Image 1 (cartoon, rainbow, N blue to C red):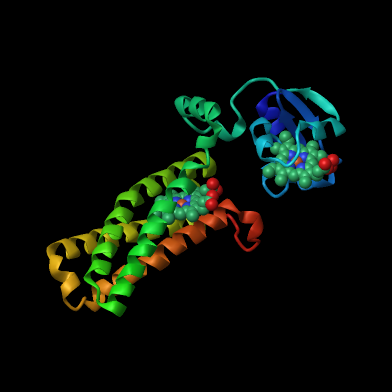
Image 2: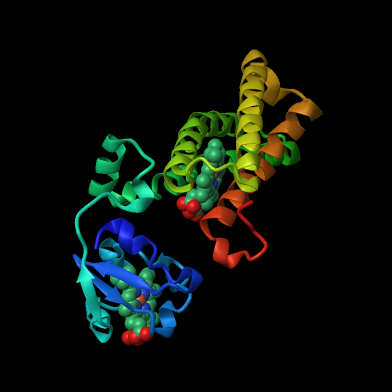
Length: 238
Ligand code: HEM
Ligand code: HEM
């Protein structure tokens, strides 16, 4: 069977549930753990799952409980067909690069910008200039790491969602643009007023800095809605 052929054996619309492992195709339709075409809420059927077994609490011996119905022919998996050849080759060689870079990179702006808000809050409470200086350096670090998170977001959207403009993606793009604008304004503002830590901080600057926290929170929230749709029944890909 080719990757395209097994792609439709995914348990949907009454189709059987096939999975491929190390070149062999198995029919797991009778397994209650694959009944919805998806295993443990994360592994979809109709594809080669060889790489995924390393994260399972069992070995490949469980597959022997089910009939071996074919051999998987080599070919480009259906879910990579929309990408240029060079990217298909790269992702087949390094399957980890498909979904991991974005969630890895988003940690940096999330952590730096929340900490930037927090340190400005501490400065307003304790009037310590070092807290304000720390907040500024955290803002700079957040601003440097944000474009990397955003670029990887656009990439994961292309690779895994075929650039389909869902409600969550729309919100994420709007929030990302807003975040970049806030970062630029705040950095320019602070750079042109280096004595800010010794004076009373402008309420506008203070509020804009505090707003960085809900912005990254919402970016993560909409991302989580996409990455874990099964845990969020109200999230429809519209
Ligand atoms: C993190 C990933 C995974 C988790 C948490 C997981 C968990 C489990 C658990 C708890 C069972 C029941 C144990 C048993 O019956 O002995 C099971 C069974 C099974 N798993 Fe997984 N698994 C994972 C990944 C996979 C993958 C990648 C494959 C396919 C390559 C797979 C194929 C199977 C099969 C065929 C069974 C037997 C089902 C049955 O007898 O009804 N699992 N899995
Ligand atoms: C600083 C900006 C951003 C932050 C902090 C952020 C944060 C996150 C987080 C926390 C997740 C959940 C990831 C997971 O746990 O697997 C996520 C997923 C996602 N984000 Fe972003 N994101 C940002 C920008 C973007 C942009 C610009 C896009 C492009 C449209 C985007 C597209 C996505 C997509 C498609 C997912 C789902 C990934 C998957 O299902 O594997 N993100 N994001």
